[in-house]
Image (tube, rainbow, N blue to C red):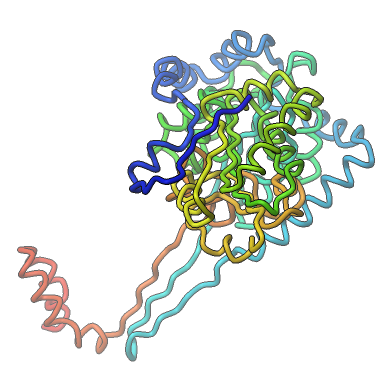
Amino acid sequence: MIQRIDLRGQTLSRRELLAVVPRAEVGVDDALAAVGPIVADVRRRGAAALRDVAERFDGVRPQDLRVPRAALDAALAALEAPLREALEEAIRRVRAVHGAQVPPEHTTRLADGAVVRQRYVPVERVGLYVPGGLAVYPSSVIMNVVAAQEAGVPGLAVTSPPQKEHGGLPHPTILAACALLGVEEVYAVGGAQAVAMFAYGAEGSEPQDGTVLCEPVDVITGPGNVYVAAAKRLVRGVVGIDAEAGPTEIAVLADATADPTHVALDLISQAEHDPMAASVLVTPSVELASAVEARLVDLADATKHSSRVLQALGGPQSAIVMVDDLEQGLAVVDAYGAEHLEIQTADAAALADRVHNAGAIFVGPWSPVSLGDYMAGSNHVLPTGGTARYASALGVLSFLKSVQVIEYSRDALGELAGRIVALAGDEDLPAHGEAVRGRFH
């Protein structure tokens, strides 16, 4: 069902570790050829192109590309009480965590009259993408919207693919989550076309669209399929993007103290997302590896999306990696840079503090990835495909810019004038020096 990679008895360099860890083949480069014409068409024809592409890929031609307020209100009114309570609790916890992320302004006084301030300013407008493929993701609405709201972004727009079974609108639970969060600008647009709409804006083509259907944004965030990732690559530089998110992944670093059922359940929980999802166990325990394999067979057959799970577990992106000890295991998970890393070992908290590369770390047997997906308060929009080596989870900082404010007095500038002139002269930029010296003559 799942391959084994045996690294025991080997001393591997960083380059060799990066080459040996299992990876999904995302294929963003291949998708660029398909996505380029779509992005160009939306940029040129706006709403008319959005409707044509929706009809082609989503099987429905939306009448209302911008979701009417009445549809948002109706979706919220129809939301069942237990689900509404769950969404409200998730919002409360995510808001508490993200509110604490807002950095304070810093002021540095280098001398009398020499002050540099660091301000954090929210971008003016963001486009938040919520997928709508094999599952429904109201939790992704929360993760994107709350982070932007806590950053103080004044303009928020959400988009999610139109659903044929819902009259060309996004799934009702997505709409209800938007209404619960007070988001009124919601679009029934998915895929690469949604990224293009946010990056370039879109003029209307039908009376209900208005002259301008959607204004361009400054930053686009949210996970999506390979075509969404490819479109993000194309518009990077026109707008800021969070990441080119690939298939979801989990790595579990575990020793003989771990419960094999817990480990197997967690590997399956990510495998049910997508046939390309990656589930990786790293362990020095042969007994645990064998027990997890046996539990995977039983549990995968019993779960609702067993076909999808079995494809993911049997793919080249999933594996049980055998290591000599937890030290080698740490090196492997750091090379892998998992989106989600669980540590189920005897001293999990201490090991967690030594991990450099992971989108989110789940410590101990009672902190499963599912907790982070919904209720932990952390953000579940995380770097994938090893990008955790340099990228971070979505958060308040994703929507803030740092602005430096420099204020010097005459005397403070005068103390540095000669040194500025010396540096400017060495760089052969004499006018830089004159801009300072000229103020004193």
